[in-house]
Length: 457
Image 1 (spheres, one colour):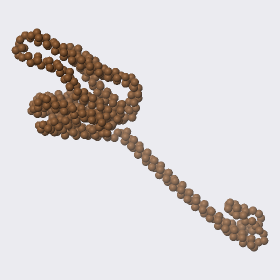
Image 2 (tube, rainbow, N blue to C red):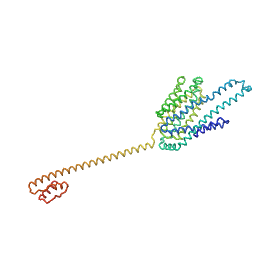
Image 3 (cartoon, one colour):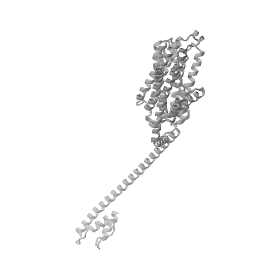
Image 4 (cartoon, rainbow, N blue to C red):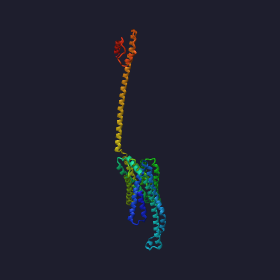
C-alpha cells in the first residue's frame, strides 16, 4: 500500500515538473516503489496461499504481462490525435522555412499543439495515479482488518518452514538465474523490432507485428499458466519452459534467416519465457523459507538483468553491425538457465543435517523397539516353557494320586474281606489326596496302611 502511494505521488508530480533534477527524483521514487511492490507482492502471495500459491503467482505476473501489452496501445490511442495534428506542421517545415521568419499562423499553431499534448499527458497521469491511489486504499483496509491474523499466520509458517541445507547458495544461484532470464526476455522484446528491420529486411508494420507476436504469446501463456499451475508442479513447468526456450533460441540463433522459423521461433520463445519467473519463486518456496530478504534478492537479480544485458547487447550490436548479437545473446542466456536449474535442484534436494539426525533417531528408536520386542518374546517363551513344566508336574502329581487311590482301594477291599471289622475308607482317601499322613481312628490295620503309604511314597 505504501509503495503504491509513493507511485501515486510521483505520477501526480511529473506533469507539472519543469526541472530535470526534480524529474529524475520523481522517476527514482516511482522506480523504487515498483521494486518494493514487486518484492512485497511475491512474498505476500506466498504467505497468503502457501503451498497453493502457484496459480495465484501466475495470475500476479499475468497482470504484469497484460499491462506491458496494453499500455503501448492505450498510449498510442491517447496520442493519436496529437500525431495527426503534428503532421501538417512537419510537412510545411523545410530548410527554406527554417531560414525565414515564422508566420503568425505557424507561431500560433505550435503553442496550441503544446497545450493539447500537455492536456493529454496530464489526464493520463492523473487517471493512472488515481487508480493506484484507490488500490492502495483497498490494501490499507485489508491491512487494518487482517494484520494480526497475518502476523500469526506468518509466524506459524516460519515456525513450520525449514531452511535448506545450502539456503544462501540456492538463493545466489536463483539470483543469477533470474538475471539471465529477465535480461534475455527484455533484450529480445526490446531489439526484435530492430532485428526484423535490419537483418530480416521486414517492413515497419511486419516488424511491429513480430514484436506483438512475442509479447502476445508471452501474455497468453501466462494466462494459461494460471490454470496449468493447478495440476502441474512448478519444477515441471520450469523444465518444460527451459526446454522450449533452448530449442527456440537455438533455431533463432542459427536458422533465423528462414522467415517461417523467425515467426515460429519468436512465438515459441515468447511462450517459453512466460512462466519461468513465477514458477521459479513457487519452486524454491517448496525447499526453503522465502522471506523479504530472499525475495528482494530475486527482484534485484531480475532488475540487474533488465538493466545490464540489454545495454551490453546494444553496445555489442553497435560495434559488430553484421552479427545478430541479439539472437546469440538469447541462446547464451537460455543455455545458462538450462545449466543453472539442475544445479539448483541438486542443492535444494540435498538432505539437511536435522533430517539426517531425525532419520538416525528414527532408526535408533526402531532398533530399540525391535530389541524390546525380542526381549519380550524371549520372556514370553520362558514363561510358556515354565508353564509347560508346571503343567507336566501337575499331571505327574495327578497320576501319582490316581495310582495311590487305586492301590489303597484294592488293599482295603482285601482287608475288608479277611476282617469282620468294617472300616471306612473315605477318610483315608481324603487324607491321602490332601497330602495328609493322618488317618482317622485307631484301627488294627494302621500299621499295614502306613506300610502301604510308605511303599507308594
